[in-house]
Each structure stands twice: as structure tokens, then as C-alpha cells.
Image 1 (cartoon, rainbow, N blue to C red):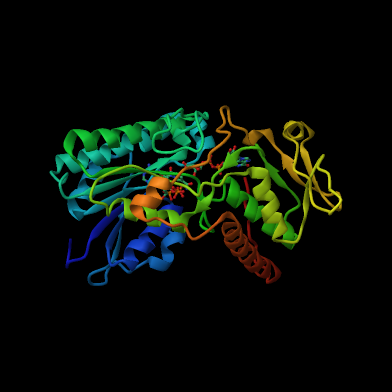
Image 2: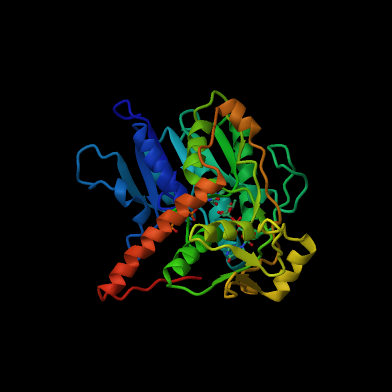
Length: 383
Ligand code: NDP
Ligand code: GDR
């Protein structure tokens, strides 16, 4: 604590959750230290609104160059900052990419967590510093039981999830072995206007916003039938904070308890630009309402490859390059423990999340459209 201010160290501060969490902690009066990787560009877009000139007296947000793969660097930062709380959010967080970079993912996401725990222990900070580990619903992987809670067995299905499994258990082990206040938040998917552009929800809202504005013709997508429990990142960083404010260190599932297919997220996003998306093979009942899609037929859609809107344009096309070698078919979380013990109450449901993301992406591309009209060359890159 400095000037009676609590000190937090946030790894992954340039990411979606890091940005929302830093904002939350600053609003609570914390001094926030963020670990940022060196990149050839600034790469601070998500936290630029929080930026403070490092030359000001008593800054409240301080960035440090660092990397989860560098033990000495992490140890030095922890020694210098003497944090009351560490939020370990840094990770190679893309499940599909982890199949391409499995060793790196294991190093950063798995051993990276060990490096932090061990640094805290070696520095003799285990009684002072509380640690939050960003665990994930990907741990559940191949469905063992639903809804998934703190007691559901894990069965990871990707190099990412296997690395996070190590991180989960080493966090539990350090808590039990050294009495450290180290906790896992097992967070289900959470999204926002700050979500990385290659995760499915943001990819969809960007594409749909651009299709609506006439910038893009089609959305290329992978598995339409995966089911995810999607919440809003703003709600989820509140839970991270609450987990570290408890009397006892414990692990918590954070989820909405509602699961939705990728195809239905697409449908909701298109409805925001006034399109009723009809998936190939879907009928319309006598009230003009789309029939529920038949599960057997849904499988065929992957072969048919096309989804059509009412005018018959193909707006969404399956591209197998987005399939994963092993998929997680169904996630639906049970956050009863978090609701009861943390008093955690999410403010956003899925409809409000889609609204927020669509409004933000439509505004973003309208601005790009103005720039184009004014003669600026802009590159809007998609996967
Ligand atoms: P992002 O991908 O948006 O952010 C990841 C952050 O980690 C970025 O700041 C990134 O830096 C940083 N990072 C990546 N590799 C390293 C490294 N080797 N050393 C230091 N920093 C690194 O992820 P989210 O914000 O969505 O997620 C935060 C955490 O929560 C992650 O650990 C993720 O695995 C986990 N999680 C996320 C969920 C979600 O639905 N969002 C659900 C459950 C868990 P850079 O900007 O330089 O790339
Ligand atoms: P996920 O998120 O793998 O659940 O991991 P992602 O948004 O990448 O995928 C969700 C589901 O959508 C399917 N899908 C596609 N996914 C992507 N990225 N791109 C596509 O074109 C596409 N088409 C279909 C996927 O197959 C999958 O079933 C996220 C990350 O934030 C992790 O870090 C975090 O741990 C988990 O959420 C909880």
C-alpha cells in the first residue's frame, strides 16, 4: 500500500480484460501497475483513455515492459512494485492459435503462472500479495456434465486448455502448500466492444456492421453449432476483483447460465441491422416466425456451406479453416457459488451484450466510411 492506496499489478493490461480491470481498479483508488509486452507499435489502444504521462508526480497507472516467459523480469517487477494484488491475465488466449503454437502457449499460459507464484514466494510476499489466476471454462472441454460448476471434472481439448489446466492446479497447489492467497476465477466466455477481432463474437459483429454499411459482402465462419455461455467483460472483471476481496482464498465459476449457438449469435447480430437471417433448410411457420432448426439438418448445413437471407444473398459461408482439430461443443456455467458468496450480479444479458458490440462496431465503421469518403486510405483487415 502506497499513500494508503492499494497496489495492483495486472499482467495482460493491454488485453480486453486488462483494460476493463485497470479502469475498475483505478475507479476504486488503486495504484495500478500494468505489464505490457514490447511491440513495434504502442499497442495501448484499449487503455489509451487511462494513460498518464509517466513524468507526472504520483501517477496512478504505470506500465512496465514484461513477458510471462521471462522469470527474472517478472521477479523484478514484483519486487519493485510490491503489489497487494496480482491479476494474472496475460496469456496467448486464442484456442485455435494454440494448436499452431503449442509450446509457446504452454510456456506463457502454463509456466508463466508458475513464474508469478514462485516470484511472490521467493520474494517473501506470500503473506502480503493476493493472486488472481485467469482460469477458463475451456478446462471443461469435452462435456462431462452440465451446467459446469467448481466441482465438474476437467477434460481440456486444446493446447491452450491443457496449459491453463497446469496454471489452474499450480495455483491451487501454491495455495495449499504455502498458504498463499491464490485463487482461480473459472470464467466462461466474455465479450465486449474491446474483444479481440479474431474471437467469434467480435468477428461476427464487425462483419455484420460492415455488411450493413455495404463494406463487406460475406462472413466466413467455422463451427456454427458450438454453444457458448457468453457474458459481458465489464461484469466479469467485477468478479475478479471480488474474488480477491474475500476472507478465504477460493476458486469461483463466473458465467451467465445461458448457452447460445454461434449461429444464433449471428442471427441476433444481423437482426440489429434489420436482416432476418434464414439458415438454409429452415422453414417459416404460419405466424411468419422461423422454425427451430432441426439438429440433424444443422449438421447438413456444414456440408451445404451456405446461409441465405430473405433476398437470397449468401451472407454467411462455412470455411473449414476455422474448424478446430478438437472442439468444445457445449459450455454452460453454474455461477451459484459466486452469486451467493461474492454477491456477484451481472448487469448484461446476451441481448444487451450484442447491442453494445453492434452499436460500437457500427460507429467504428461509420467513422471509417467518413475517412474513406475524405480520401484516406484505410485497411480494414479481417481473418
Ligand atoms: P486478450 O487476448 O484480449 O489479452 C491477453 C493479454 O495478454 C494481452 O495484453 C497480451 O498482450 C498479453 N500477453 C500475451 N502473451 C503474453 C506474454 N507472453 N507476456 C506478457 N503478456 C502477454 O485476452 P482477454 O483479455 O480476453 O483474457 C484475459 C485472460 O483471461 C487470458 O488469460 C485468457 O486466457 C483468460 N480468459 C479469457 C476469457 C474470455 O472469454 N475473454 C474467458 C476465460 C479466461 P498483447 O496486447 O501484447 O498481445
Ligand atoms: P473460445 O472463443 O474458443 O471459446 O475461447 P472463440 O470466440 O474463439 O470461439 C468460440 C466458438 O466459436 C466457434 N467458431 C469460431 N471461432 C473463431 N474464433 N472464429 C471463427 O470464425 C469461428 N467460427 C466458429 C469456435 O469453434 C468455438 O466453438 C475464448 C477465449 O477467450 C479463451 O481465451 C477463453 O479461455 C475462452 O473463450 C473461455
